[in-house]
Amino acid sequence: AQSVTQPDIHITVSEGASLELRCNYSYGATPYLFWYVQSPGQGLQLLLKYFSGDTLVQGIKGFEAEFKRSQSSFNLRKPSVHWSDAAEYFCAVRDNYGGSQGNLIFGKGTKLSVKP
Amino acid sequence: EAGVTQFPSHSVIEKGQTVTLRCDPISGHDNLYWYRRVMGKEIKFLLHFVKESKQDESGMPNNRFLAERTGGTYSTLKVQPAELEDSGVYFCASSRIAGGETQYFGPGTRLLVL
Image (cartoon, rainbow over all chains, first blue to last red; front, side, top):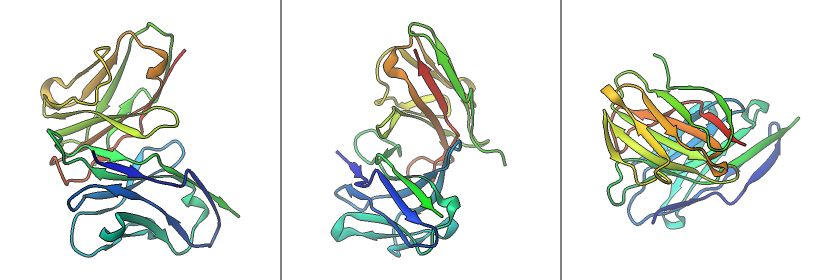
C-alpha cells in the first residue's frame, strides 16, 4: 500500500532562515505528489504539486519542492521564512491502487513555528 | 469563484446523538471527497462521489456513517449515533476531474463528541 512519511512532527525556525520540510513516499510508479498548508483556523491550501516533467516544482508563497525518485522524497523548501508561514504542512500522494479514483494519502503533517 | 464551504464550522454533541455535516463544493466540480483527521493522526480518506454516485467508500469507518449527495450538488455526512472516537476534523474537497486534478479543500468541521 502507498504511504507518506513526514518524519518531523514539529519544526521551529527563525524568521528569515531557510526551511526544508521532509517528505518520503512509498509507491512503485511515478507518483502524483502534493504539498498542502493549513494555517490556524483555515482549510487546506495547495502549495504545489508534481505530476511529471521538471523535478523542481515552484509553488505559491515562495515555496518549492524537489522530486527525487532515487530517494523517494519530495521535500518542501523555502529560502527565507516569514512569520506568516507558521502553519501545519501536509505532504500527500494520490492513491492509484484498486478502485481508487484520485483520493489522497496524507502524511501526519509537520507543524512549523517561526521565531522572531 | 466561491471555494468549498462546510457547515457547521464546529459541533459539540454528546455520545449517542446524531450530527449532520454539510459540504458545498465548487460549482461545476463533479468530484467530491470527504476526509477526516482524528487528533494526532493523518488526514484519512472517507469516500468519493462523482456527481450523485458513490465511486469509492472504502474509507468509511462503519455503518454509523452515511453520506449522500442528492442531485450531485452539496453533500451531507451523517453520523448516527456518534461515538467518542468520531471526534476530529472532517474535511471536504472537490475537483473538476478525478485523478490528477487538484482537490480544493474546505475549512473543515471540527466535531467533538463528549
